[in-house]
Image (cartoon, rainbow, N blue to C red; front, side):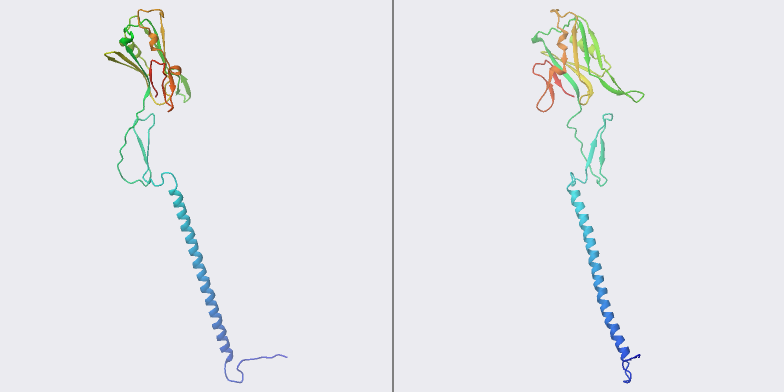
Length: 255
């Protein structure tokens, strides 16, 4: 048996439409509440994403600020190649136009030794015969084939009997190693200096060997006065600098 119902049958009222309208209204209200809740959640989710991104950016900025020289946004770096005499200046991309003053506080210098020859100490300015050899130590260079080779840097001069210190200086200055020999005459005698000619640490390792032709000659100044050995005539001080040892007659200047 089949039962068919229809609200309002016999009453003349369309209760079926009324019920459908009520159900539709109820469904719409529920749907609107869910849609608004979903939209609110999506807005909060997007806000959390933006906050997280902003915090990451802030963290990155803080990490950059913690790095060395982070606050020095106008950092300028200077450098100088040993083969280039002028300064090379490099600036960061965000460096604005400005002026800088460069002050040289330490010039590059070469290795040198200095000795005083005083008349009060019996210096007569007349040397005995012999040979003086100046050795700057080995030098590494690149040949025409692009290969590294090592060569010795030394030269020797013959000293004649009766040569003065002025003549010794003149003979020693005739070299092709860049060595400069200087002489200053004072009221007490002479200040004699030999400069290696090449600036920079460890570019030279000077050694002077003087061999008298007649070691027993007592009528002339002995050329053995020119002997200098870096290993025995110098020592390293507390600051790590190489200076003259207490027993050396030479005053030493490190390159």
